[in-house]
Length: 276
Image 1 (tube, helix red, strand yellow):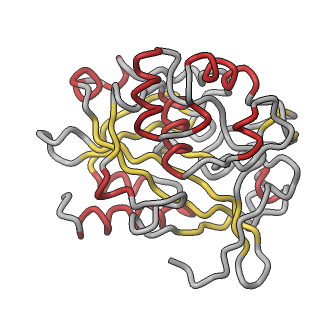
Image 2 (cartoon, one colour):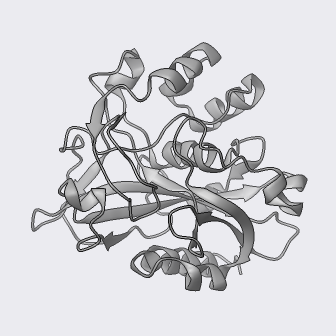
């Protein structure tokens, strides 16, 4: 944990984007997800459908190819992202990543996607954590920001089509508590200066990545994720072109170099907890 002054702000660039809809349009799976996350964003299936259709109605982001796990963005409307400011005034976008571990009966592996903008580069689903959104038409959305766990579950749905409670479930002892998953994997910042990314163009020093850890509970997903995952983007631009299970150490080696720090922190944490 960086010894920095953390100040939670509205996405100061009036719309540095996060990602899109929550977990699934299956009402059964949706209710399970709502129970797990206890989010006012997900109280009824009707509210969920409104969230899917109205989420992109707040702040504007004009961007180019995104480093840090998100594909190219172009003049699309997104809610503002939560961010932190360090002691020197640097602004870091708060980013939630979903680490999906193989089922308990299998050797430890991590579910990865191959980035559509960088073939050969594999990573976990991730994206910004939505902040309070005064411009939203949804009352709850105007007054409550996402937690890291909620954002990670939403990203998992958007980028791989996986539903919390149906395909995966959180691992409580690995996720920490509170909005930021305190007591879980150590958060790590990675800079994006010099990449020409939309983060840099919107005044961000980089991202502070925090993990939510899930366990696979679906036999078909365990057998062949390409037959289960939906990489179409769920209303957003797709992030991945392929998915696979990968050994933890190989996962760390294969991730984008600037982002390797958060993955090393994940590996260290899992080994300390006896997951190896």
